[in-house]
Structure formats: C-alpha cells, structure tokens
Image (cartoon, rainbow, N blue to C red; front, side, top):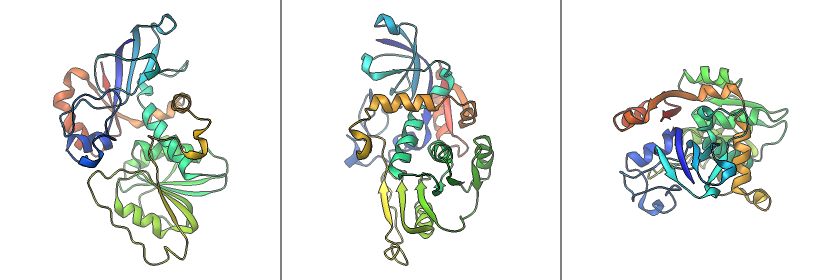
Length: 291
C-alpha cells in the first residue's frame, strides 16, 4: 500500500544515540529499525513513529489513518501487515506516541506490577512518564515519577502522577529505570525492598554502566532485569502477537491528557536543519513532525 504521512514522532533517546554514532558495532543488526535504509553509523534513514493515510492499497483501508514503524518520510510503500489502523476517535496528531506506548506497556508487563505495589519510576521522559501513567492506573498502586528536571513536574501533574525531583524515601516493590542514567539505577538498587524487582528500560548504547552490588544487594535477593520492546514477555508470548500489542497501545492513547507529551512540532521541510537542535534540547519529549 501507499501511505502519505501526516505526522511522525522523534524518539529523542534512541535517535540521539543513532545520530551521534553511539550504536555499538555489535548491535548494528539488532538496531536496524523496520524499513530503515542505509547502514550504521549515521547518516541512515531512521525513525519508527509514522502516522499517515492510505492512498493506494486494499479497498477496506483506502483513506484510513494508520500507524507504521517507519522512518521520517513524506510517503512510503509497505505491506498491509506493517500498518495498524487507528481506532475511531484517536487523533493522528497523538498517534505518533504509539511506539512509546507499546514500549511502556511491555515494560509494565516485564515489571510484573500488581495491585497494591509501591513503584518508583526513574526518568520523566516519554517512556518513563507513560510507564508511570499505566502503573498508576492499576488499582491500589502507589507510584512516584522521579526526575532531576524541575519542569517535568508540570508533565506529571498533567498526567495526574505523583512527582519528585529528589531521591525517593523508603523502599519499593518495583523500581523502573527509564532515565538512561547509571546513577538512577544505583539509586533504584538502594531503595529496593526485600526481593524487589528492578527493571532497566534504558539502553546505554556504547556506554558502560557501573553497578553498586555491595551493601544489601545480595542480602535483599534483588532482581535486575532488562526490558526491550523487541520481544513480548514470555508469560504473554503464546497469546499476544505484535499486532495485538500495537492495537492495545493505540487504544491506550485515547486520553486527551497524553497530549502533554508532545513538546513541539516542526515541518518536515525544516527537519534537516532543525534535527540536531531537537535532539540536543533537554526539554524535548516527543517532538512531532508535520507533513
């Protein structure tokens, strides 16, 4: 089918690592995005959050708005199985968050969050904020979103999430690091309760992250696990296809409050010049590209 793009979203964390050449050679194959063109290091055609309208293809999909894991591009040809139709009522402008919501949903599954859990989420970027948003909607949970950037308190308030700009107090059942900071991971270890689960959702590229595994780490029998959206967690894999997970992510975006995660917009024709500044700006959340 031929899709004409309406909007795409910049995933600042991953795209910064790609743009600055921080993808390790060992990860070149795994880091290839769907429909990517070129070979690492940068420049490559990258990105994975495109929303467009079907202009040519199967009759039932003609004119329908769809989401596709595709780089920033004004129009593209893909197989029918590559797209997910937007649910009725979801604005295409917000649907650029679909890949981030899919990642956040996978993290919540990997974290094994249950009603009543006390949860700390480190990093109030798009993925961290969405993880806290989902976790806080599980009945009985006590969730705090932590970030050193004071302005992130405004985002947390818009999403009705408890926010802290300081080190957390007390111990937690589940701790999720979505900050890309090894210091935050160390703080998570220090505040993990007995047999707590720590989920590392960040990807460090070619950086080495030191871990403080002394102290009470062994005595508390802590678990540190990674979460990566490329695989559905084993406990769900028999029933959940990638298509079902994406459909659920799109359905979860039907909340007007999530528009707070869009921090700016740039015309596609201006993107080549604006791209470095968008990536380097610490206030960037999801930056939307308009076509």
